[in-house]
Image (tube, rainbow, N blue to C red; front, side, top):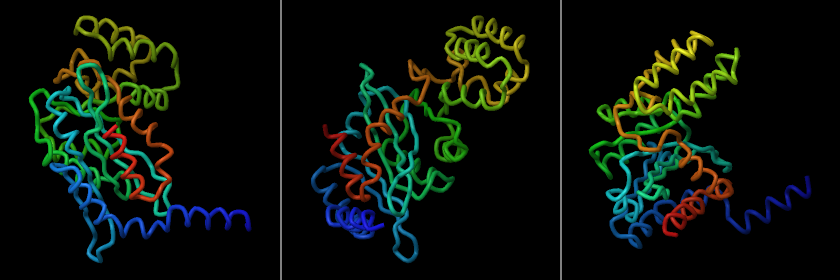
Length: 265
């Protein structure tokens, strides 16, 4: 216990208290816009002025969006702070496949209200492009929010997350199902898709019904309503999560500063 208290004291001396970091949020966001003209920041508080959401969009990302693919990959990741919370991110790729984080936000958790607020800020900043589509895992709150904020934009599922859902729900012949499923998702033509679907139905017809209920256009390249190019997964969001992994236990302003520096680099 004495060693733990010593460590906590040392961390507080280095980073200050977590509550102090939240108090610095308005000043930090103001200075961020001042130092990066054209950037967009939003701070949303509850009735007693306590923190609820913060949204940041650096001008470099706003300027770069028009030169990137119109595919936006979103995801959320838990924070390791004293007050917990979640960081939400939206990212895209340029023509060479390099990742460009578009926006990020600190929210209480991945719930319907926080995701809807995040997408509202995203739409106000970026609008909507021709051929735009959104890619994510199957989190219910994300899908509900996009139906409200981006009803006309196709929303596609990450094929790896969907594969994991299939593994959880259907334990029969998993290896065979996995091989056929990836062939289905990656098929370029409807004819090729139908051939692999017949193979899947022969292995386990329940999986076909499950995928049909989700909607072929949500996960299949051949049936997609948008040109997903090579973005069949949410891997670029996972890459951003891996990059900020060690920063997610920092005080909130330090975490935001880490993300800003990451984009600037």
